[in-house]
Amino acid sequence: MVDRFIARFGEEKIALLHSKLSVGERYDEWKRIERKEAKIVIGARSAIFAPVKDLGIIIIDEEHDTSYKSDMTPKYNAKEIAYYLAKQNKIPLVLGSATPNVETYYKMQNSNGLITLKNRANNSKLPKVEVIDMKKELAFGNKSMLSLKLHEMIEQNIKNKKQTILFLNRRGYSTFVMCRDCGYTATCNKCNITLTYHRKENKLKCHYCGYERPNFTECPECKSHNIRYFGTGTQKLEEQINKIFPEAKTIRMDIDTVSRKNSYEDILNKFKNENIDILIGTQMVVKGHHFPNVTLVGVIAADSSMYMSDFRSNERTFQLLTQVAR
Image 1 (cartoon, rainbow, N blue to C red):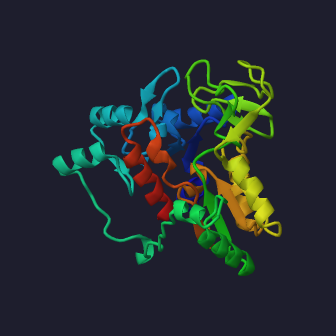
Image 2 (image 1 turned 90 degrees about the vertical axis):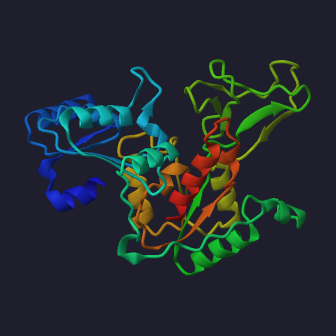
Image 3 (image 1 turned 90 degrees about the horizontal axis):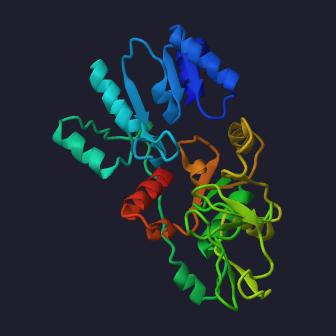
């Protein structure tokens, strides 16, 4: 997004605010905004607090995204603050999304504020989407995470020097660790949900609050060593893809691989410019990127997000899969 705005308006008019900036960089950008040197502020949810003078418009892209709501102190919802600022300054607020929240869509319909784009950019068509029932595949002896069709298409892509994206909305190696003798499952002390196993660091982590602890080989309850790992995350998927397609170059993108500054951009540039065959990742890999050489996207365990303890799980799954397809 920043690259597109710089190409259109020039670098000196744009300020950038996000959590990966150092304190000094954030201060410099803040002051540039305050001095009216920057006319456009681009950023994550905290950018809504930028000291913009003579504010003319607020645009919230991908308004359906849950990350606009902060669970950390101070708790706030960037969309609600945007509504307030727009009302106070009597300026337009644009909420953009191909898959808007149901309540946003309803509100806009009833306030005559709904603007619909009838066609995609350049009148391009949506790609062909095929749903594979993995239960049927299992009945024929396929115990892999990949369907036979997806396996065949990835193979074809590698031969044709085309790129593939594999999306799995779970990071880590295994989704939970359990003792097969007594049934003990490692859970978070704060959230009371199962901890995810991260093989590289040999740690168990909570993906909600960040709690982590060392992995165990002996059950804390019954002292058994019959410990088993269940479920699949991006780390395990990457390992399996490297075994199935040893000749292919792969790269993984999730929270664990983009913790360093600029690592997000580095991975995307590497995938785009270094002829990497397969990009494996979580939601990050399907967020509006443009890769001309990508001709195949595979969604692993596409229905898994429907079983989350969230009354919106069906809606969120629809949003996620539609975003992947477009």
